[in-house]
Image 1 (cartoon, helix red, strand yellow):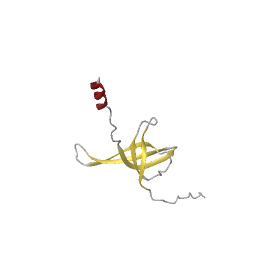
Image 2 (cartoon, rainbow, N blue to C red):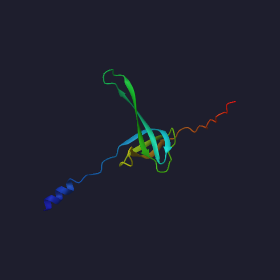
Image 3 (tube, rainbow, N blue to C red):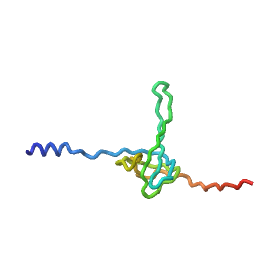
Length: 107
């Protein structure tokens, strides 16, 4: 009996580290959701040239603190919706604040 309880406790799943990504916010149009583009460079398997690859991830931003152009750190989490599996961990670098350009009426 003691052997089975010892075996059960030793095989208990230990929490692992969650994956993290750093990327640029490309969309903040959804409620509590941001779209982050993560870019990476990889050598081409045959040509050996460096090729840029990018992928977009949907992340949960509860307070809406991230803005377009910010570089953010994402952390893996449980599925929150059909596409959302990441959450905003921290804002690494804020985007430069640029004044919005007003459209001139055509005359």
